[in-house]
Image 1 (cartoon, helix red, strand yellow):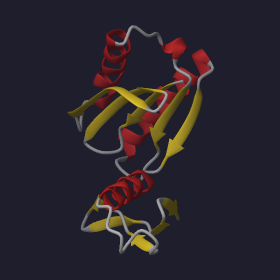
Image 2 (image 1 turned 120 degrees about the vertical axis):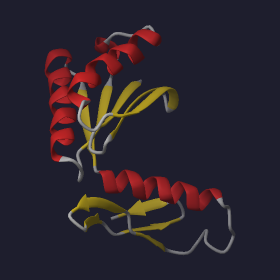
Image 3 (image 1 turned 135 degrees about the vertical axis):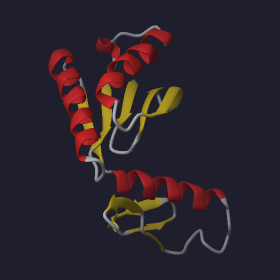
Length: 147
Protein backbone atom coordinates (compact mmCIF):
# COMPACT_ATOMS: atom_id res chain seq x y z
CA UNK A 1 0.00 0.00 0.00
CA UNK A 2 1.43 3.36 -1.05
CA UNK A 3 0.70 6.29 1.26
CA UNK A 4 1.44 9.93 0.48
CA UNK A 5 1.68 12.29 3.46
CA UNK A 6 1.32 16.05 3.08
CA UNK A 7 1.99 18.69 5.75
CA UNK A 8 1.38 22.34 4.87
CA UNK A 9 0.12 23.83 8.14
CA UNK A 10 3.54 25.17 9.19
CA UNK A 11 6.13 27.26 7.33
CA UNK A 12 8.05 24.05 6.63
CA UNK A 13 6.13 22.05 4.05
CA UNK A 14 6.76 18.29 4.20
CA UNK A 15 5.79 15.57 1.77
CA UNK A 16 6.47 11.88 2.39
CA UNK A 17 5.89 8.63 0.53
CA UNK A 18 5.72 5.24 2.20
CA UNK A 19 5.03 1.70 1.15
CA UNK A 20 3.79 -0.85 3.67
CA UNK A 21 4.97 1.24 6.67
CA UNK A 22 8.43 1.78 5.13
CA UNK A 23 9.45 5.37 4.37
CA UNK A 24 10.54 5.62 0.74
CA UNK A 25 11.05 9.36 0.41
CA UNK A 26 10.58 12.55 2.42
CA UNK A 27 11.22 16.15 1.50
CA UNK A 28 10.84 19.22 3.68
CA UNK A 29 11.33 22.83 2.67
CA UNK A 30 10.85 26.18 4.32
CA UNK A 31 8.33 27.80 1.99
CA UNK A 32 5.98 29.85 4.17
CA UNK A 33 4.82 32.09 1.33
CA UNK A 34 5.31 29.76 -1.63
CA UNK A 35 3.60 26.47 -0.77
CA UNK A 36 1.01 26.90 -3.51
CA UNK A 37 3.80 27.12 -6.11
CA UNK A 38 5.97 24.31 -4.75
CA UNK A 39 3.59 21.60 -3.55
CA UNK A 40 2.69 20.02 -6.92
CA UNK A 41 6.30 19.97 -8.26
CA UNK A 42 7.50 18.40 -4.98
CA UNK A 43 4.84 15.68 -5.12
CA UNK A 44 5.62 15.07 -8.79
CA UNK A 45 9.35 14.81 -7.99
CA UNK A 46 8.77 12.23 -5.23
CA UNK A 47 6.48 10.13 -7.43
CA UNK A 48 8.85 10.20 -10.43
CA UNK A 49 11.88 9.40 -8.28
CA UNK A 50 10.06 6.30 -7.03
CA UNK A 51 8.71 5.41 -10.50
CA UNK A 52 5.08 5.84 -9.44
CA UNK A 53 2.07 7.65 -10.78
CA UNK A 54 -0.60 9.33 -8.70
CA UNK A 55 -3.06 6.59 -9.67
CA UNK A 56 -0.89 4.08 -7.77
CA UNK A 57 -1.30 5.93 -4.46
CA UNK A 58 -3.74 4.12 -2.17
CA UNK A 59 -4.11 6.70 0.60
CA UNK A 60 -3.21 10.33 1.26
CA UNK A 61 -2.71 11.60 4.78
CA UNK A 62 -2.99 15.35 5.25
CA UNK A 63 -2.40 17.62 8.22
CA UNK A 64 -5.67 19.41 8.98
CA UNK A 65 -4.30 21.86 11.55
CA UNK A 66 -4.27 23.73 13.71
CA UNK A 67 -1.74 25.87 11.93
CA UNK A 68 -1.42 28.43 9.17
CA UNK A 69 -4.85 28.99 7.63
CA UNK A 70 -3.65 29.43 4.04
CA UNK A 71 -1.25 26.49 4.25
CA UNK A 72 -3.99 24.25 5.60
CA UNK A 73 -6.30 25.24 2.74
CA UNK A 74 -3.57 24.59 0.16
CA UNK A 75 -2.90 21.08 1.48
CA UNK A 76 -6.58 20.19 1.71
CA UNK A 77 -7.35 21.53 -1.77
CA UNK A 78 -4.52 19.52 -3.35
CA UNK A 79 -5.53 16.35 -1.51
CA UNK A 80 -9.23 16.72 -2.32
CA UNK A 81 -8.40 17.27 -5.99
CA UNK A 82 -6.19 14.16 -6.06
CA UNK A 83 -8.95 12.19 -4.39
CA UNK A 84 -11.64 13.31 -6.82
CA UNK A 85 -9.54 12.73 -9.93
CA UNK A 86 -8.02 9.38 -8.90
CA UNK A 87 -10.47 8.03 -6.29
CA UNK A 88 -7.79 8.08 -3.58
CA UNK A 89 -8.84 7.73 0.06
CA UNK A 90 -7.98 10.63 2.40
CA UNK A 91 -7.14 10.62 6.11
CA UNK A 92 -6.95 13.89 8.05
CA UNK A 93 -4.50 14.11 10.93
CA UNK A 94 -4.33 16.99 13.38
CA UNK A 95 -0.99 18.69 13.96
CA UNK A 96 -1.32 18.14 17.69
CA UNK A 97 -1.99 14.41 17.29
CA UNK A 98 1.07 14.05 15.05
CA UNK A 99 3.24 15.88 17.60
CA UNK A 100 1.85 13.85 20.51
CA UNK A 101 2.46 10.59 18.65
CA UNK A 102 6.05 11.57 17.89
CA UNK A 103 6.61 12.56 21.54
CA UNK A 104 5.18 9.23 22.69
CA UNK A 105 7.51 7.32 20.36
CA UNK A 106 10.51 9.23 21.68
CA UNK A 107 9.50 8.63 25.30
CA UNK A 108 9.16 4.88 24.78
CA UNK A 109 12.42 4.69 22.86
CA UNK A 110 14.10 5.56 26.15
CA UNK A 111 13.00 2.08 27.29
CA UNK A 112 12.86 3.24 30.86
CA UNK A 113 11.29 0.43 32.87
CA UNK A 114 9.79 2.93 35.31
CA UNK A 115 7.50 4.47 32.68
CA UNK A 116 6.37 1.45 30.67
CA UNK A 117 3.18 0.87 32.68
CA UNK A 118 2.65 4.45 33.84
CA UNK A 119 0.07 6.76 32.34
CA UNK A 120 1.88 9.75 30.87
CA UNK A 121 0.49 13.15 29.86
CA UNK A 122 1.56 14.83 26.64
CA UNK A 123 0.63 18.44 25.88
CA UNK A 124 1.71 19.49 22.37
CA UNK A 125 1.88 23.26 21.92
CA UNK A 126 1.75 24.97 18.53
CA UNK A 127 2.51 28.65 18.05
CA UNK A 128 -0.74 30.40 17.10
CA UNK A 129 1.05 33.77 16.84
CA UNK A 130 -0.07 36.93 18.64
CA UNK A 131 1.39 35.45 21.85
CA UNK A 132 -1.08 32.55 21.84
CA UNK A 133 -0.70 28.79 21.42
CA UNK A 134 -2.85 25.87 20.31
CA UNK A 135 -2.79 23.20 23.00
CA UNK A 136 -4.17 19.66 23.23
CA UNK A 137 -4.08 17.10 26.02
CA UNK A 138 -3.18 13.46 25.40
CA UNK A 139 -2.45 10.54 27.67
CA UNK A 140 -0.49 7.44 26.80
CA UNK A 141 0.09 4.11 28.45
CA UNK A 142 1.96 1.13 26.97
CA UNK A 143 2.44 2.88 23.60
CA UNK A 144 -1.27 3.69 23.22
CA UNK A 145 -2.13 7.35 22.67
CA UNK A 146 -5.50 8.71 23.84
CA UNK A 147 -6.96 12.19 23.46
